[in-house]
Length: 172
Image (cartoon, rainbow, N blue to C red; front, top):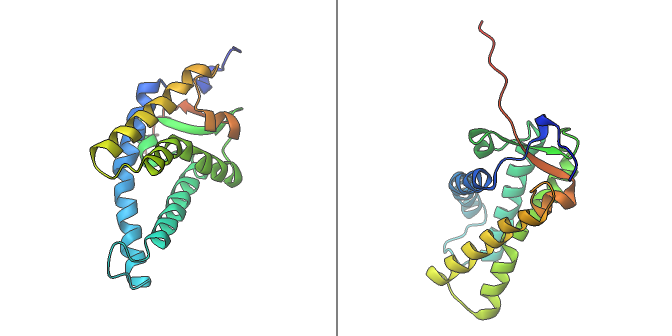
């Protein structure tokens, strides 16, 4: 394991998971707003009507959300709260392409669990929650196998999460 400059210190897994959970709370509002825009535009009268279109729209809105924040300062709102920043391996800002790649590969948090639910026929409720929860914890646990304790989608995209404290504000 190579020596990491002090400015590129990886936050602990608990801190990253707390940020992940807080991001989920904030994304609830983003998803609700997306649904409120989509439903009248598509004249959706029932939740199951146009379900795939809504899912695709929400997927795109979430992609825009993450790519926007990651390329403009390297932090979503939750990442700002937990003082975590996304940068390239060298500490440079993330490009749009790299942010989009990271967004797509970050779905590895959920895809194995969602595939398990699909192929086992488990419905919604506690069984689905348990499968997704265990899948997320297993994916997070894979950081133990990476030399810098980064997530695997970050390793593939050549990005990293770092601890970041904002500089002190100047008194004016």
